[in-house]
Length: 559
Image: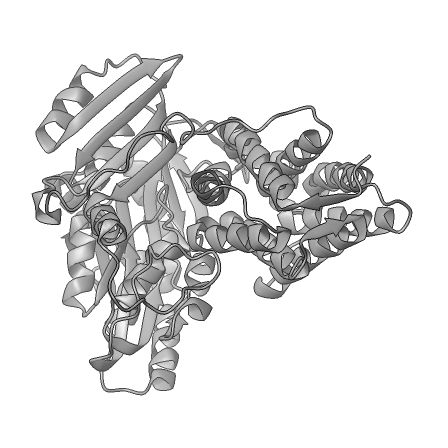
């Protein structure tokens, strides 16, 4: 029987939850029912919780429960990726507020803190949907509260929460129409249950905390990062990924290509997986090449120039005058907001050399690399916001799974952050074309939001897995075509693809059609598709732009 927990115990509970989530990352990803390659739920939750695990393992336990909870919440908020990661961070942020000023927590305190976490998550989500992680966490918290009224044993309280969470998870298939069609439970809810299971198992002594990646290296001396200059880094991005191999193609061709675009190359093929590490300046092209072998299971891209600059600052001798104290849990990695030189600034999330350059030409002050399969964290977006020399910074996420992460930046900076809920690249382009630097923020917000209504987006990608979705029998590797997020069809023949695509475009009476072609598509093939689409709409102006994006062969703007 355990009647209270302290900071050390809570730290170990979180670390065990991360270890369990990491071990089951792909099992959670596999529950994503839509076959389009995506920033999968398991990966996003794992990366988000991993930010807290890294902090806890690096800095050790805090003396009090409130200090540990604050550190966890701060790390999760900065590392949140995708909608599932943001919701997870909100659950822990609410818990940290519920545990405020407590050195230890009894069963009633802990149950109440779980309820505070759920309240914070529901409050932040614009339209909370049932049959998701929100439902599972809410019913778990209610069960914990009821149990705490009957017992002082925290293990029993968490056991009751877990039992209700499992029942709620099983019922998600009946609550969510999309899950009902696919016959699966909610991925985010499953990840949450895995975490509860691990936290309870630790309290009951059934699992122990692993050393983690920092354990073996703890005794090493810290490197002197001032010994070389940031400019000495030849390749900017440390790119790591795992591919589930779905064909018999050998890795020699991949290795030969990576040798031409990077260094520090390591490729390991084991049990149907290709694990790769490379330093490169073109991570988008690298991932596109990797997709030829099968779907991406996980991706991690880090800017080594940025990391070196931060480490350089951390290892520099302390200045005579100390800097202002940071917030609890902050590690100094996020740059302070730069002074404003103008009223309006913009930050755009995108990937692909051509698309990045287009946004710059339209006036973007900052570009955050990210999109499908590569959801940037809140910290990634906040860095770009703080580096923008403007009082008001508009953020264009250009992906529905990045909007919530962007919205978390607002309370973390002194700048006025306004997130325009763009869900596609064409929406972002259309909005940026209305940028008037001397306009008032309120007027610009209206203009940007109005622009979203004028553009429709078609996308052509590939099926990441076999699926039976919305009446379509889909096979891995087939061309998937979508219009405004809805499935148009799955094809092996490009002529049929163009025919069905034109039928989906027709109701929108297009005046302008723009085809952004991806990294693995030739300009000739892109022009051929554009000609096929344009022939059906002779009054529309059709054009081709090299986007260079991975994952999507074509992104098509219809205005």
